[in-house]
Length: 118
Image (cartoon, rainbow, N blue to C red; front, top):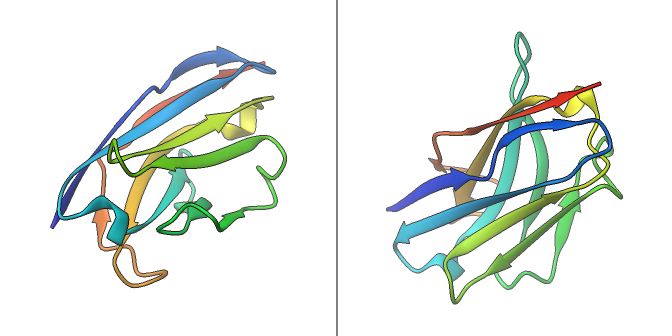
């Protein structure tokens, strides 16, 4: 098993930046594909971005492409989400998730709130 703890959320004005972190403990971090999802009030949870085990392959939702960057540091058991040019529609609870099998996210963090004001 792996335990995930997100941090770095907060309130920011539109156009600002935030960096989220997700610290993992438990089994070897590098064996997990990692991803970020988000859930806005009254909406379904949606995929934001994911990164391969080595960090060499990344995918982004169209809504965040060019503004968000996912990265990981396997030595620190941490995955990051750098969010730039934030928009009010980015307001959501952001969740970190881990998958042993590609695309099957069995482990989730508790979430961190991101609020973007106009």
